Length: 233
Image (tube, rainbow, N blue to C red; front, side, top):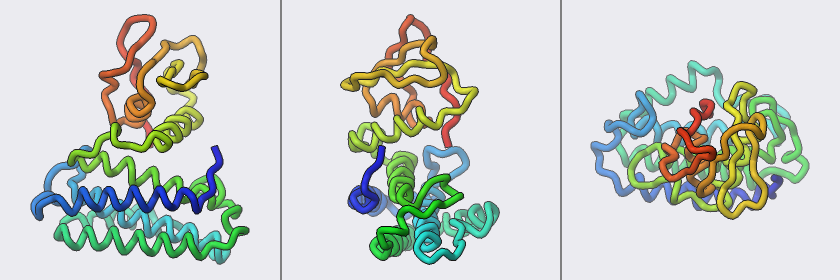
């Protein structure tokens, strides 16, 4: 599914503003409270969202200038940055996300058309895939805040693209299954088509496969329990 990266940037803008509205509605003590991600507080998630924006800005800079600019200096530096920022006051966290988003948006606006075609090894595709990667981070981690925003709030187009991406990138050892999202004419197959048929809303199937939903509203045919999906991300 190819989409103009600048068109996707409008979705990134909307998703970021929605996440910021959620964050701005929290009280100061929320940063120390648990998120939906094991071992991470709300502050960890918010800090990661900000630092990821800076990492994506680095990738666009790489594509535009030709100077290798990794998302993070190292995995250790990524972890250290999140830990260092997690306990900051809420207002500082919100301002950090907004500023990091603006840097990312400026980097996207500065991209000449030819730079979007530059291949970036860290994401295994061209720079045109960076806005989608950022949108995915914002939408999924908004859910991970566990503060009222759920996969049911995802835009329909986002949920379908996420679902297709998970299916296309499924690991070889993922359990076989046939997915029949409501409203989709053709089934999506993981592994082989001899697995159980899973039916339900697109958002619910995407959330379940992404580890952000329990699949309670999904059906299985033949009757039985839902398979355990492969770990995503």
